Length: 139
Image (cartoon, rainbow, N blue to C red; front, side):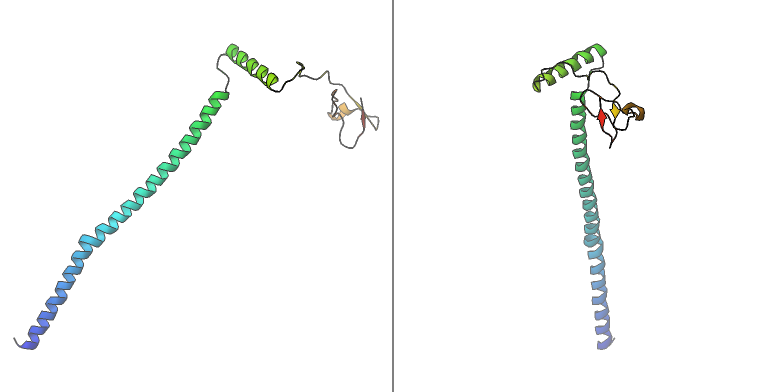
């Protein structure tokens, strides 16, 4: 073996060594790092989804509690009593003096053109609003 062949063999050995070092670096460092990075991203995404679902669940639970607070009881007698109590509190809160909340009897009103408002499905109430648009009414 002459010197030239020895240098070529040494160069080929160095290139082979670099190739083996590169392959081992890739196999033992780069690939596990990439795999762990992918797993970390998936775990973070899953955690974000879980937090979003938790927030949504809290909102729905609060909404359900609000519905439960406003709902009437299942028992009809108890529901009637609760409803009457709520109405009395509402009357007291708004300081309503009159206890009657229903209007007097409905009656047909005569419109300006001689027809009655009730013929078109309109009825007059004691507090107004009885005729169709564009027609003058007299009760």
